[in-house]
Amino acid sequence: MSGTTDAYPDRFVALLAERGQPAVVLQGTAYTLYQRMVVPFGPAGRAYSLPAEDAARALRSLGGICVRTTGGFRPSRAGRDEWWAVICRRFTEPDDVPSSNTRSKLRRALRRCHVHRLAPHELARTGYEVYRKALERHGPTAAPMSRPAFEAYALAAEGFEDIVESWGVFVEGQLAGFCDTYVFGATEANYATIRLDPDHLGRYTSYALLHEMNRHYLAERRIEYVNDGFRSILHATSIQEFLEHQFAFERAYSDVRLTWAAPYGALMRLTFPARRALGRLDPRLRALYELERISRA
Image (cartoon, rainbow, N blue to C red; front, side, top):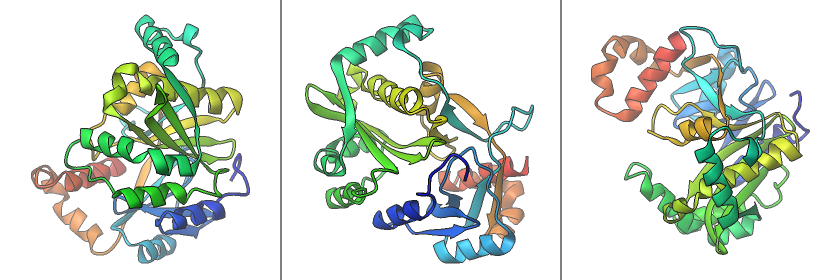
């Protein structure tokens, strides 16, 4: 994989195993399970595809109802821009931020907050309350893991600091937010998990955390881009719009393809015409119909 290191895919598979997340390597790419879909675990800008027999093998190995692959970043195409990753390719110094309101908030954030890397044992020791309160803010649909499970998840990163890095933002010496980042060589830094304590949002902790991480990955290490993930169609979220408006993130468009496991493919084809009515029954079902609609487009 161009721009990555020898760590891919074997060390990432080993890290996922330590975190209790099974993965399989096919066609030189790591695949894992995400929201009952088998997805590639690698840079979003790369094109992924699996022959039918490999897709079936991945589904047998990992479970799930479908394989979701993407075609790599492409130029905008009218009428086909419905799937994207939210990425940033350049770091912006505070004085160069176009919005005076954003400049003011960012400067206050950098005065009030301190940002630095967290060792796995630090995140395990101090991160759970931030994690719990951040999920509670999103309502009852996001059930937090237990404290022992969170600590085990954080500690599983020990020895893998070359491919996963945690960052913390502090207010008066207290952890007020953190981010777990997967690093794919010089290609991508994936901001996989951002959790912010709602009690400290008034100190603009999100501004400080994202600004300093962007500085590190884009300006200092010259990584090609940082990535906040693909479009969210299951949970309502404002973080990606925030990144686009405040931190010069952009939509990197991609095509998406679904390969359904039996009997889900047949059920999807049969019920797709009634998707609007059936989608009202469950938000997860509505999200699957929307993803199928996008893939057909």
